[in-house]
View 1 (cartoon, rainbow, N blue to C red):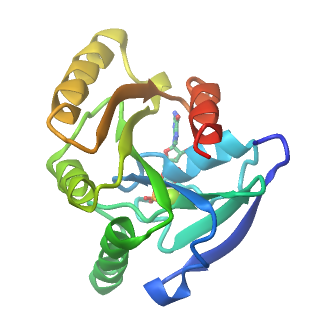
View 2 (tube, rainbow, N blue to C red):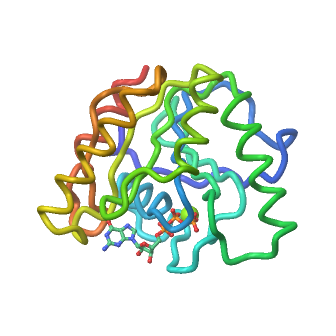
Length: 195
Ligand code: GTP
Ligand code: MG
């Protein structure tokens, strides 16, 4: 699926701007700065396809990328703290929630969690939203290269425990590093399996 490359389609700022729901959609959700855009770049093998930066709140639109003939990868704005004007943040948070709970072609959400920090209350809010919308989601730990082994095991246990309370969550967790490539092939295979 990923061999053919990926292309940016469009950035969306309102539900009315969404492309037709005619492809399988996989979205990347998570707190600001968790590594959503970087993960899309690692998966597609195109550095700079999705804009990443060290400033939380970098992605402010819902960005659609085509991969293969029938999939969209969807890069979402982050939730939680963002380094951007409040009115703007509130606008994109509203859009994010509308998208996550009202998109018929949304097939799977990856909920990204920093492998150093684990699940925070804002993550739980989003997971509860996905539960009510019956959007199946999968936890993906990011920045594996930055976590020490003993912290990683503690975080893994916390994340597994929390995910088990969410009916829409898959039990399997994927540990990734966009920097080092850990977990990237695993995620590609999961995405390619969604047909
Ligand atoms: P927003 O769009 O602001 O919500 O952030 P995002 O979730 O898209 O994060 P982004 O991909 O922009 O990455 C945030 C920062 O984390 C950047 O400085 C990345 O280089 C860094 N980063 C992302 N993934 C990894 C990783 O696997 N390892 C390391 N070491 N750094 C990473
Ligand atoms: Mg981003």
